[in-house]
Length: 380
Ligand code: SF4
Ligand code: SF4
Image (cartoon, rainbow, N blue to C red; front, side, top):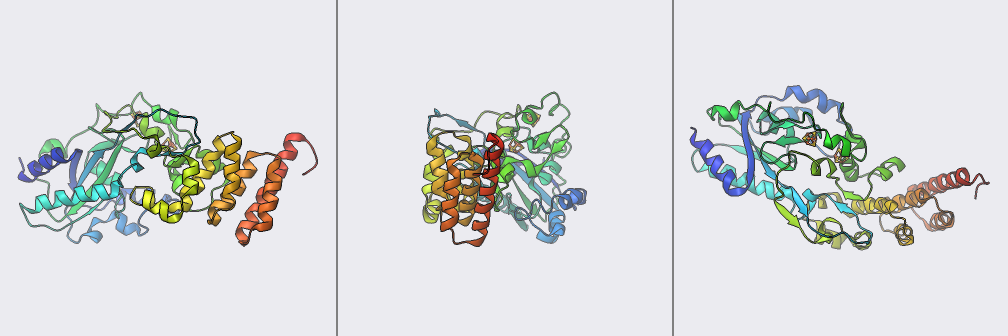
């Protein structure tokens, strides 16, 4: 058995890596069509140079093999819900940013291997040029589930992925690792994730990323009315298709403080940029910045009928961020309340930013149409 395999196996055991595998660093030409199809949708999320996405040699000249690892993050939300107005943060984004954590793990593994032989390497988790999922699938650490995620053998669907591109030939790895198949481990007869998906992004025919709540909460732009309604109370991520996955194993940690996973929306909206950075800058949602998360928080308020939720939306019309003010104007319209007319008129009068004035104006027209349609009366 390869000495390198033993080193990786030991390192994995000691560091909570639930699955690992290796593959050759040949080009990933077979995912080019998918990459091209989703190029516009994924702009800003992934490497834009398609050649870099499919050719490991561009990232590491002389690349021969890739090591892929998976680390479980399944959490038990062990807290009681209360009646407060809260938004939901994906369990993968609660606590230390997994990009940092995974980078440490990958670096540690590469350094451990370097003690036995000299080699060049480059490691990434989510932010690298290659597609983490394509690498993981090629390394056979799992199969592609109906939820679009890699379902790993020991960690199920809730795993963080990372990879190391190396210039060493790892085809000497044990056959059971290189040749494993998943015929006895599949989504067959399940479909729980498809049935649980709140937005219809998942269906038996595949995955429509543009409808995925997790994707929508990470967009930087102003959302459409439809997108605002789709995201529900999620202020970052979604998790539904992961939480229900029948292949998930025992949770690896507990979240006992409700404020970690479900902060009060008033708290989120009240944060200054500096406070947001201090509190969330080192989590996986920090990279999107305060304005995007506050925009989502305003959308989440649509799910609450309380007068207080409406008042918070109105308060967001005075936000420092134009994105938040625009979203608040649209949310006032979506609430379809008569009093929203005066609120929007006042906001339009006080607004200085031209684009926001135009959004408030459109929201006012939208609200007037909705009220007229609902009551059959003349426009307010
Ligand atoms: S993250 Fe949510 S919206 Fe996206 S596919 Fe999964 S269940 Fe559907
Ligand atoms: S929930 Fe079921 S169908 Fe969906 S990925 Fe998990 S095992 Fe597959």
